[in-house]
Each structure stands twice: as structure tokens, then as C-alpha cells.
Image 1 (cartoon, rainbow, N blue to C red):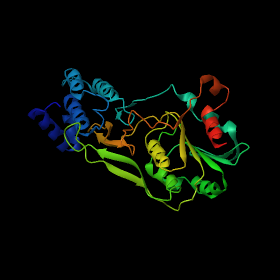
Image 2: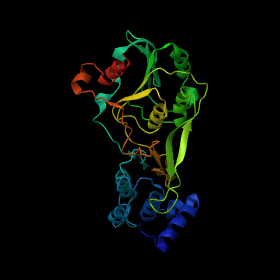
Image 3: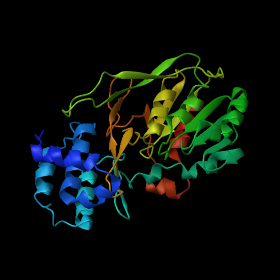
Image 4: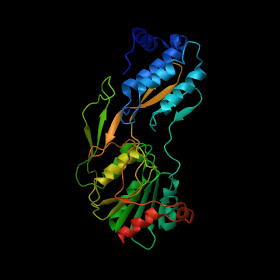
Length: 332
């Protein structure tokens, strides 16, 4: 990595130590760029995985920045630098715009939009959860649309677990779930496990080198008022399943009666830390690496299904859901 000189360290020290009213006059494009670059350099967890030459990015951009550079120009430069990391959890918030990398547009045909065509006896369908039955079966269908908020917000879970013991199987759909809060996923998964299970390992950057990390730490689920449901569970995933939803997938996959069907998950997990400049700009930096119980990194790889199924544009437009159809077939 590039070695910062004395002038750089003095600039950073003065920037971080000054009072708010002083910072507004001291902050310029040079010191702002140096601070952002150094925060990423010391925090970001995926330089090596993504084969990012951070020093080259510094050299390519710092030569275009001087004390005459405007903050509009700097915002554009910082936006492009952060987007170059190709990381869903990295965000740069400038004066009037948020810049965030997007991984996908082309996998929408694998969405769960057509699943409703296969359902009957829908108990609820809101912005959090769908609960119904697969037509002409005794198979429960649950779609968890997001994991935002807190576990207490998901009052639907109580109904799900009250009705589940009477069902022959469960289809659990987390396609297009962009994540949110691991605690929400745990509130569901811990109702299904009868024993403590490690589902994930994480480690954080802890040094100046890009390969400096602490030891891998296991993360587990433990039984919490569990329902002893040992019947088949089919877990539906696609590329729109990210972040905490991927941790949720790993939680559910520790159960012995689960089969994952569909497409590989999106591969985005970062536990971002938030940093800011004195002019109000903020940026989020992925600070950890998360891995499966086999120590396979999730970022940019995702979690592959046990049974691969993809919709086609034709079947999707016809109102069909081949992924859900395969789940029903496996349970027949």
C-alpha cells in the first residue's frame, strides 16, 4: 500500500481534530479526498477478493485534485472511485445524491411475482410477509419480502408458527429479499431449530494491510420457543436475495429437512461502517467478510441452490413460476 507522508498525516489530524466551525473553512478537495481514501484503505474488507488496486486508483485520481478543485468536481470523483469497488454495501452520499453500486437487472424473470397464481387461502399479503396455501395441497407457502425493522414488527410470524404443525410441508420464499436486520431472520429461524447451529463465520479488518483480519468468529442460531417441524422445507432463492437475507438463507440451510431451489443468491454482505466529512457528506464502507460454514466467502459468490431452476421470459410472461413449480414437484 502507498505510504502516507508527513504532510498527509498532518492534514488528516487537523481535519479530524478541528472544531465544526473551523472544519468548514479548512476542508478542501485535497484533504477530503485523502480522508476518504484512507478510511477505505484502513477499513474495506474486499480489496483482495475483488482484485482492486487501491493505490492505482489513488494515483489516477489524486493527480486531478488540487486546492482549486470544486466540491462538485470532487463529488463526481469520489462517486466513481467508490462505485469502482462494485460493492452493494458501499455508498457515497454527496450534496444531493446517493451513489450506490447495483448488481442486477437481468434476473427479474426469477422473481416471485407469479407465485400468487399458485396460492389459495391467503391469510395475509402485506409489505413484509405472504402466508397462504399451495392450491389443492396442504403445503404452506410463506414469502418473507424483507427483513427490515425489528422482530417485534413481524407479528405475522406468530400466525405462521401456529398453523405450521398442521401442514405437510413448507415452501419458504425469500426471492427479491434485499435484507435488513439479521435479528428478524433469527426470530424466524430460531423457531425451527431444536438445537444450536452454527450457520456463518465472520471476520473484520484489524490492521493496516488489506489482508489483516481478526480470527473467524462463528455465528449461530439457538432454539427459541421452537416448533418441532421435521417435515420438508423448500427454500426458494434468486439473485435478488442479498445481505441479511443471505444470512437468513444460511440459517435455514442448517436445518436437516431443507432443500434450496432456484438461483444462486446475490452475493453481497459487508456490515458497513459509516464515516463522514465535516461538510456533511457520508460514506459506508464494508468492514467484514462473511463466509459459509465451509468458509466459502459470500461476497460476489452467493449461495448456490441444491436444485437449480430458472424461469424464462416466456414462462414468466405466461404467469408461470418454474421455480415454485419445481418446489411443488419435489414435495409431491
